[in-house]
Structures are given as structure tokens and as C-alpha cells.
View 1 (cartoon, rainbow, N blue to C red):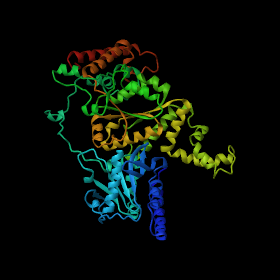
View 2: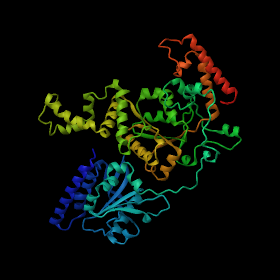
View 3: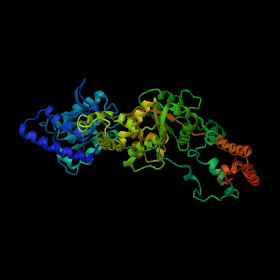
View 4: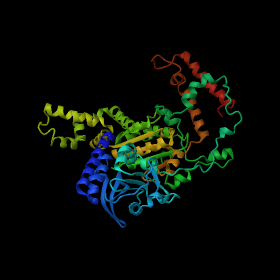
Length: 565
């Protein structure tokens, strides 16, 4: 597990040992600089794994010293110079960034190193670059897709190993694998956006907009009905409600015609340009439902974005998919999990929150699979156990009490690291049962844009770690803001758009549902709304039937006088 405290201690060791090596050997080669400092900083300090480091890859511009990958995709190029090539950087104790084409280009060795690594990035379409001689580390954005030339951009500079040690939190938060995978470079070098137009809310144009509404005489009696039938249904579990009160369509043309206005809800142009497709009706084989079904059959992970405006019904759609239209697929072909951000954790705890929710679902919904039996946990950590048997367990016979006692110490440590344990456990369980992990992440669009970006980037990591199908619900405007910041550019995602339901059919559908419940079983309807308790009997007392009749009469009155029309 990545530990910044241990990483800083390791950096101190590297600094001291490299100083001793330089004092003893005088002139230092590039190979020595890479072996003694750069590789050790990347792997031992910043926790980049060997599988995520490519060395000496050939391009038309030359050979890249290092190429750092996140989830198998190139993310950063590192150009290493030997220790004797000094980078001359202006001395300003309070300054941490410099314009690439200004201060950093006045020194020839520094400029040559920057130009060289930038050429590699340009050749391979890799956005970020690091130039270092072991002592100084210059981090910058080498490839830009905005109007700012790359030389006009800023570089984050750590002038010496000692300055890295003194400002270790900043170095770690920018360049560790965990932080880069979480979008640290995107945040550091993102372009500030300016609003292109002024936005207005309709309520701001209303007279006396804050004037309290006066309730009519039917309000008190109708409140249980209104809460059940006409308010948010995403949190309700009854299948009849999700099936009968939900309505979805791809356009608002009929509303436009009714209002004699040119109003349509099509997929926004910026989403169309990004390849977004309509969710489609239940029978639409080319839409969201078919794509999920197809993705279950493949081994790699895939990330889906479900995009829509406020009130378009993203949460309700996901709940309905899980409980009705997608239930058979999820039950037969997958282990599925829900992470709901309706009560979000602190930003520093997002990853722990997600893995905890997945583990909770695994332990509750799938407890019959006994996923955490000792023999299965041993299978999950087979490689780690094999390594222990070569040293600390070499004197114990497998299966004996001493062997199991010693192993349990390590097993507790492994299982407490949720970011490693949970994805390995889920993958092992799915492999054993022939299933596919599916993750739904909901109510992210209620959060700040920066928080949403962190959740999205984490969802990408989770998708890769579990090889899961992950579905993240976002607002259109949240996607637009993050996309303009280039948050999504480095990742391959499937985008689907869900349009808002037609208001008149939706409200008519809910009124019709309420009346049908009254007609089908007048006695049970008040009990269904939580008004009457039958004491556990199968039918309400005859005296209560008149209450149901009065309810239906009041709904009819409201409709007659135009309150519900």
C-alpha cells in the first residue's frame, strides 16, 4: 500500500546514498543517475510499479528514457539526463512555477532537455512530461489542445532533491502513481474556463417569487398520496411503483406543440460530438440496454456515463434497471454493486468509501457464496503466500497450527488494505462463478464539479482494477465542465443520454396509477400509503373503506376544479 511517510524516509536514504556515490566516483554517467536516483524515486518513493514503467522505447524522435502508464495507457514521458548536466533555474524561494518559454529557456541544458522530452510527447501524443537530471525535476504539459502554446504554459519545478524532501507533500501529491491516476496533473495544468454567456433562472424573472404558497383545504388529507405517488420515486423499492409510475421518452416535441413553442430535448451538440447515444426505450437494441448486455460477455472493464439534466430521472432509471428490466441479466450474469453518494464522504475518503460499499454488498447480497472463506482468501493472495513460503514460512509445514497462525498475521494485513483486497476478491469470486462485476455509482451529480471529477477518475481506476462494467450518472453540465477541463480526454468511455420525461404524460400516468389503486383495492390503499394499520390482517376493517372512497372523491374534486389538470 502506498505510504507517503515511508516514501519520504526512503527519499532521505536515496539522497544520502547518492551523495556518497557522487563523492566517491566524481563524474556520474546517465545510467548511474537513472539507476541510483530516478528509477528509485519513481518506484520506491512515488510507488510506480515496474509493469507501469516502459524504458528505452523507440520513437522517430529518439528513445524515451521512461514512459509512465496508468491502466496500461501512456500518461507521462520522463527524460533523464546525467547528474553532471546542471539545470540552471532562477532562485526564488517563494516561487514554484515558471513559464517554459521564458525563465526555463534561458539556460541551454535545461531548454534542450525540455525540448527533447517534448518531442517525444508530441510524437506519441502523450500530454505530460518530466525532465530531470536526478537533482532537479521539471514537470509540465507538453501537448495542449487549447489556444495556449505549450511554451506559454507553466512548469512545476523542484530545483533539488533537498527541496523535494522539504516539500515532499507537494511532490507526492503531484507525481505519485496514486495521485496521477486520480487526475493530479489534469488539475495542476488545466486551463481556466471563462463563462461564455450569462445564465438566468426563470424564478428570477417572477414577481414575488419568494412569496409563500397558501395551501388549500385538501392539502392535509392529500399529503400521503402526494408523497407516495407524485414525489421522487428513485428511493422506493416496490416494483409496481417503479414499473407503473415511471415514464421515459426521448423527446419533448409534444410539449413544444402543446405550448406552441419550439422546444425539443435532443442530445446536446457537445455530447453528440463526443459520440453520446440516446438511452432508448426498453425495446431499443442499439441503446444502453443492449450495450450493457454485450459488455457483460467481454473480459475487460468498461465505463459507461449516464448523462442527463436535472430531473431527467437518472437515479430512477438505474433503480428500475436493477429491479426490473435488467434484473434477469444482473442476477444471472453478474455480481452487482451500488455506491450511492447521496451522503458523500470527505474527499480524502472517496476511495475507501467506494471499496467499503462494494465489500458491504458482497457480504450482504452475496453472503451465500461465502466469498471470504479461508480457502478463497488464500487463492486471492496465492502469490503473496508463495513469496512468504520462501522466507518467513519456510520453516513451517502447510496446514499446521504454527503455519496458519503465522500466515494469519499477514492475512489480516492484506485484507485490511481494501484498495487491494476488494478488487482481488471480487475478481476471484467472479472467475470462480463465471460472472461479471457490475458497479453503479449514483447521485454524483449532486456534488461539486471537482468532487465529481475525483469520483469519475476513481471510477476509471475501479473499472480497471475489477475489470467491471461501471455506470456513473452525471448531469450534462457537470460532464461539460469536466470535459472542457480535459478530464475525460485520456479515458475511453461509453456515453449515453437520458432525456427528461414528458411532463403531461408523466403526471397523468401517476394520477391514473393512484386512481387504479383506489379502484382495485380501496380498503388497502390507505394502508399502502401508511395511513391505516390493519393489525396484520389480510383486509382492512369495513369501516375504513369509506376513507378510501373519501380519498378518491378528493382526488376527483381536485381534478374537477383544475388543481391536477
